[in-house]
Length: 526
Image (cartoon, rainbow, N blue to C red; front, side):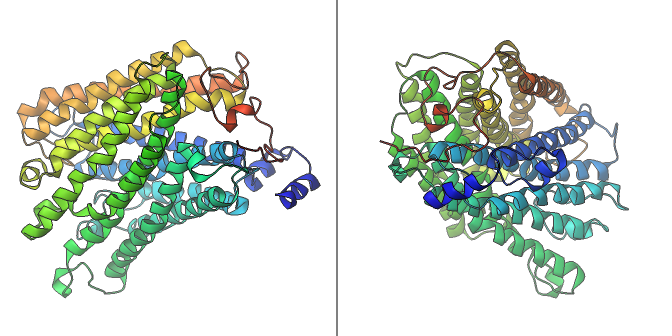
């Protein structure tokens, strides 16, 4: 620790005064956290516009606005941009900003890798979005990149593969950094079990990322060699098997969805105790539940593939494994509920988003349990029911937790309070919008409306119209969020060091905003 302090004393305290040099070369965790969060916001807005194109086309049956191939490009790009450009960078940005100040570290353990991990991203997205302007257009084979469909992509194909590689590299570097920081730079006295849950959630997530990102890299490289080097991994005519790709992809893909939600669990486990003004119920059980979820996430992948002709024993195994994963998730939901029980609750914007998260994420969890039943999945598979399921866990799940985190820690980051009235308005508009968008999809899916198709039968019109109106309401209400954030950054009521009455943790001992180099002398945790 002392060496670290010496190194920090050698150079000037504070950012580089030169604007471009500061942001290009920074290794400061707060700067990089902010860069990740701004990039994520831009990507959310880009992905959001793509979603609105999809929903505008689906407002009524028949082909109205865009060509079917462009519609397919939008569905594919929307998912890639939202997952790898919206949710993941937002969580990495939050981990950058918060982990060092939560565990009493001076910075992240590997600051240069941190800088590089961020600056790969804009180039990766430039490659990905550039595909829209190529002959034959952007990838249109779905975000899952299933062969043989994705192998029909035009010149955009290598760009897609290369962009996915770069995004994966960035995620792995972020994960290595998180693990190194948490395991090596905790303040004296902070044992692992005393560590805040956000740090725990990220430690577990980081191991998941390191385990599965190389698998994705392998799968997409096999696609690349199938297309350009004459191999037949996934080509039945050459002795390969397209279903093999599904196995390899979902071995990455299912842990990936838990990578997208575990940090959210960590965030909500900070916010609910703060506004309930009592400690979190069952801290240790929450840690074990997250670890159990992470372990189980590796053995459930084939529930995405019940309809491909799995052997019966295989179906039974994956069905039961998927149902078991609901147990640790249920433990978490009950613990949050028990935290609020008889607490002194107040409903500021972060709490509203956290409660919205618990309630609607649970709805998404239940529809997931329905999908886990193999015989029933034959009816649900590839319909809008699936779309409803994963959007309920990703939008009011992952995205709400990110918004809750921003409202919760923004006063700490900027030193100003945000506009509470506008924050609440943003929550209610978003919540009405989200439910109008995704709840009807359960019904149209159960009635048999297939997903990823630009046209539909006449009887689904009303549900689709409700969904489209909801989507535009949700999409445009995010402009209010952008306004609230920018307004808060520019000024407002001064925030205290503690910001929230019930807030506990090392980050609240620092002034708001924290100094450029926080904890140069490590705090001692009792």
